[in-house]
Figure 1 (tube, rainbow, N blue to C red):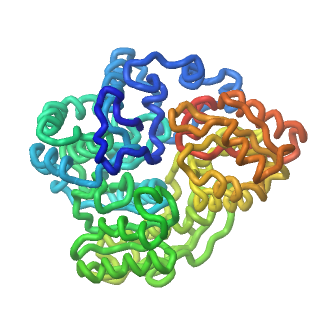
Figure 2 (figure 1 turned 180 degrees about the vertical axis):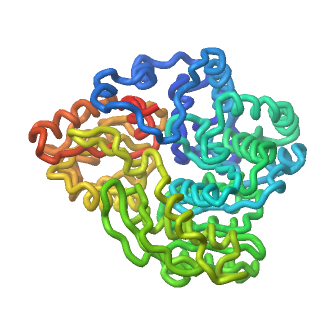
Figure 3 (figure 1 turned 135 degrees about the vertical axis):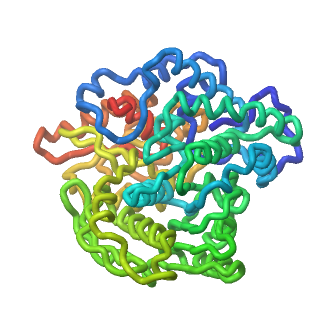
Length: 517
């Protein structure tokens, strides 16, 4: 993500000139803070990875997160595309309109109309839910396209075909195919197309070109004026709504729900996760207005039971068509169980279960699909002895879910936190959620220009934890080393662990340092 390039003259009347968080600075960070700059020494360390940390972490896991292209020519071409995209308005700058993306897609022949879609909004859990929906649809032999944001490490993660990120070569080709049309729209509009708008058009074009049987699309922010909202999703999914992006979406769950309800289209099916009462009321009102059918967690579907299991949890889910017992989900936390219930209901709704017919989907297929789900950077174990866990929580609601999950799943005797947050977040609320479970906290920063200064973060942390429990390490690699050393102080068999959190960017860079990617 980026701010508007410095050579663009800001419009003094632009009400959307202030940056907001959308957690996607890693490509820009690894290429220099602005297009064309040489990476700083700190960023070079992150890109190369720490040899010590990599050695401790062990061999990479098969998690579907692509590394940089091995071919130097392809890598240079991908970096060139990343730099061109980074020169546009980043996801931190928005103009609440779909006018530009509509104009671009119109000239491209409306690729988003070539396939049905499931559209996902909410505050937390969107990407994990999207990945589960994708896994379920793929298990039923449908060719899927998935568009999610932000990415953990590679920009190519955002666009997936057949449940895998598109190759760097295909990403480059897709960009080059639409680039002339992007320039045409840029010349016609008051503002150039943004980073996110161009990526959204690339995804929709790639899906049509594949072609896919169905697209699973996650909004970037909000819903009504999000660039993705040029599709008419057959199923609209709303994950739990909480306070985040309050400067853009509203200061209450009710106001935020008003923006997010914009993805609910006429005659669609709305799959509604458990919500605050005022947010649910807004969604239900919108559904009535457009004659949409509503399936509510806790009413029409939900989690019947769950037990912690080795490597994840064992679930019994109640879907729209009946019960699905003995579902193994290799993800940790009650929140992921609820995401699984939402994903299952969304897929059932897409297949007409609960409306056209009342029957369960094939149980063995559902079991095998859930058992294969991954969600990188979400309560992800990247090292053992001591255990290092990564979680991309970045707001208080996400932090509370992560704190509950790590306590339930791991039962650490002592947990050390590594936190690198963005400056525009509710950092105090975030830290307060972790205070009961962190014995000590190492505050740091990621490479983003929006990262909170470590000393400022430490000042808040001291107020929450007390000075004796807070350490400051400005470099992330040093912070990881310090936290691992603190965890090791109790001995090899002590059961101490490390949780790295605060930002998708922090988690992505920690994955690189730990040899994942």
